[in-house]
Length: 257
Length: 289
Ligand SMILES: Nc1ncnc2c1ncn2[C@@H]1O[C@H](COP(=O)(O)OP(=O)(O)O)[C@@H](O)[C@H]1O
Ligand SMILES: [Mg+2]
Image (cartoon, rainbow over all chains, first blue to last red; front, side):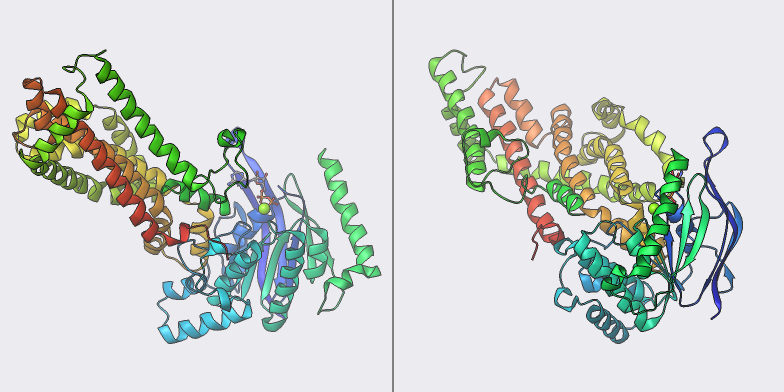
């Protein structure tokens, strides 16, 4: 598979002079097309910062990021994003939220309707097409956000703790749903989390970050074949991996203290 | 999210909370942030008006205060009847409403786009905010003599008093409401391909609209203060003029009718805002299916 994202010696600082914070230092990473990558690490280690730089929402201080062979310079149509907080537009119905990106691009009404309908079906929200986001549960809102991002057909989907605000049960449901979706169209996904089980269930590769300043501590291949279900997280090899990740994260917490 | 929607719903006049308590002991009536059943709320609101009215009746019936200073309710009612049926007070009200409406529309038609731009683009904010904040603290009423000199005592002067009184603050309020739109919402739209112009008109404006609508409602109330002052200073018609003429004849009952009428107009305009708010922003109703 070809490399779709190349992160080359990227650093990021915020502020100037005495109040300068180094959020990320000398991070390099190459991601192949179709990979499911998880960024794992304690909060404050720069996961969001790196994701925003890949998205073009924030500039790098040093180093470069290439997406699909182009240096990142603002938003790239091949990159979509799902945020942790609910970002559905409250004044638009579910179907208009999903069609938002298509409307911005003046997509013809036939194509738009077809696209929105098929996405509604994929995220099982057809029944709620005309509801407003405030009438939906958290899990449904994040499905709207995912459908809305997919509508403009990005090759790469960036997800910043998208299930972080959901209850445990809904969260597992959404993880399974996401794996399903991913197995159907093999987009490249970068998924940020600080939840070890979530990382193991989803990832082809887990990139573990350490804080102060944000660095890549380790990159771990998850050799458990897809499709995975929540039952498989009970398996022995999962247990070994879980222990390894825990030790890694705990040692960071100790170093920080 | 549910939270922020609730906040916005409160802004357009929705009640305290969504559910009603099951029992209503004495303590529950004063519970913090606990909604009351609608009937109880209505009874409370009405009884306070009744209480005020009763207190007024008692004070004038006992003659504690001379009815030269405090006319009795019956005097005021009689005066109101005369003013509305014989003296053409409705015409004065219509003139005042017209002046408020035109003045307020002029102010809002500039304040809305300006506030929107200042809240969206730092360039405009840095350029204009200090100047507006400075001007805002100059009392509009102090401009009246100047405006009379410049514009005479015609309607143009009335409009200008209202514009001076409302424009600066309204612009700043719209700016604040615009700035309150969450950055993540804007970034989500950027990631869907929104260009700057689309961000302003398809994201920031609709997101800020309920709050801006509330700004308009509040500032319209102030416009009434300014129109009465402007009419008291120099006019030959309007509610303020009627109040001033009545004071020359020491006709306190007429003054009362004028003041109370403005209060009622304020209530009605609030009600209209609330009703149209419910119509304009149906998504703020917190129905969960
Ligand atoms: N806009 C910003 N201004 C200043 N500091 C920031 C900003 N964004 C992030 N940081 C800092 O950068 C570090 C990494 O933050 P972040 O990327 O949000 O971490 P994570 O997503 O892993 O929790 C933190 O120390 C945070 O305080
Ligand atoms: Mg984060």
